[in-house]
Amino acid sequence: MSNSKLRKVDSENRAFKSEWEHDYFFILNKDHKPQCLVCFQVLAVLKEYNLKRHYMTNHKQKFGKHSCESRKVVCDQLKKKLFQQKSLFTNETKQQEEALLASYFVTYELMKAKKALSDGELIKNCAIKMAEAFNENKVGNKFQTVPLSKQTVTRRLEDISNQISNNVKDIIANCSYFSIALDESTDVSDTNQLLIFVRAIKEDFTIFEELLKVCSLHSTTRGVDIFNAVKSAVEEFGGFEKLSSIVTDGAKSMTGTISGFVGFLRQNQITVPTLHCIIHQEALCAKSIKLSTTMATVTKITNLIRGGNRSLTHRKFLTLLEEMDSAYGDLLLHSEVRWLSSGKCLVRFFEIRHEMATFLSEEVTNSAELQNDLEDVEFLRNLAFLTDITQHLNVLNLQLQGKKQTICQMVGFVDSFRKKLHLFKSALDKNNLLHFPCCRKLSEAEEEEGLEFRDYTEIIEDLSSEFDRRFNDFESFRPDISLFSNPIHCDVESQPGHLQLELCELRCDPSLNTSQVTGIDFRKLLSPERYPLLRNWALKLCSVFASTYICETAFSSLKHVKSQNRNRLSDVVLSHILRVATSQLEVDFISLVSSFMKPCIFPRHI
Image (cartoon, rainbow, N blue to C red; front, side, top):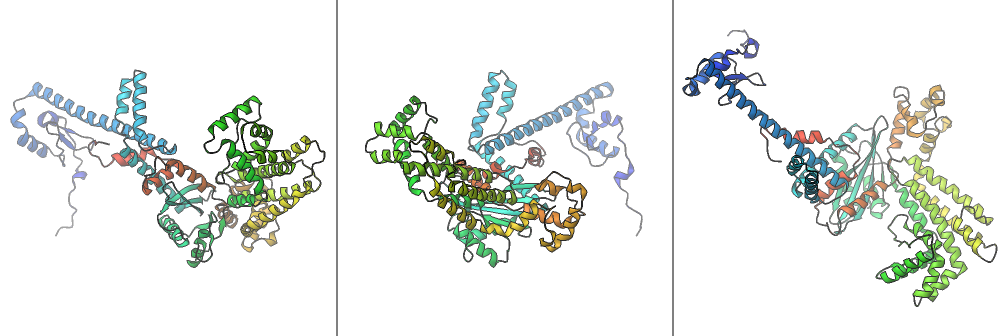
């Protein structure tokens, strides 16, 4: 048997001869293969024998009568026909790609605005009408080709959601650490929805906060149910290996150490810190203020004026406020589940207390007791103090809200408020109302001079004790937070042993000692080669979720998406909508269109 290599066609460097166009009606296509101008068949091998045999077998009988100039004319006509057909396919494919891209754009904007899937057709009709109004019929015809039916928008939504999900997987796979935030609530159809958000940090300290999964719990919501849902979601995205911490909403099914979610974590040897949302704890501290009777009276008077079916009474009250040129044009209703509503409600109530007393006496019967409350000095003292302290708590609550805040920042806000409480107590001991504007206004408005507020120091002390008790689980992070806040001037010997050597180098590094940046920006300056342990420690600390704020905002979106008028959404579609609506990642629409069109040899309906 010969050892010589077999001959390959590609190595023979065969060239196409120009006379073959007229002799056999063949040209070279874009793949450099011979293509028949008559039947468009492409031959595999560029050999004159193959071209001649194809022509003699299939086309000689029809075209053999042409010769010389006549044959050239026929050849040119066939070439023109082939190029027109290719151009038609190319143009139609391009139009389909543009229509498909427009379909993705509209779907994305619909989901970001949390609109109904069926609104795509409405947008299409509006676009066509606008084109007609500008006398752009060609543009209107293009709008006609954009597919935006409810079923199509659902498919586009799934494509976009899957791309975002794949991007989240890549982020988690390439991140240094990640933490998760959990919150569970009931939607309008009484289905328990568990939202799982992930906070991942890359080596360059870039932080991503994205929805990991929406888990619909149709039966029970015990600790084991939550654990199984979280375990399934995290393992789908890479497992618990890089997990740095977990923050929950503080429910018993979450925090229970035996049958709760935390207990099942420990049983499965997942030993990461678990925190109770810092914003929830602040809200619980606010509820500990012992002036519930005052708040109940405020709510009762507010509901008497504008609650329930009291539209006529409410209109009369609005007219009175307008006539009296009041500071506010209306009262606010208070709800226990509406963030900061109590503070705003109390401010308005206090400012228009005189107008309300006038209105109750003139327009509302059987309200003598409430009128007496609005004129009672003790009630007004309680109201003024409750308004002021609630406003201070609202300031703290607003500071704690927001995405991508580090645990160091949030604990710093809480510590600052705890110091303010000591300041408030010291001021009230002297009846100094500098930090209590409503109390000061009431004191100045009273005919009796020297209205006392010293007895409210006890409430301040109780509130301070409540903060100390509820934020105890963050104490384990206190040494890390202290080091993160002041790495240059910290006591090196009191720090973890594996960081001490690098801290010594850090304190003597002139380029870092003179730097004015702080926080995460300062950590970005640390050289990975010189400070690998410090960078890794900082990455882990910055990856920690300190609150479930991102979950709360997502639940607001969920209530908007799945409402009384739109309560038949499937779990899968709801998950896709929330993923797109809450994501901060950019969507590569070009790749979506390319992946859709790639399998097509010829254009297809989209």
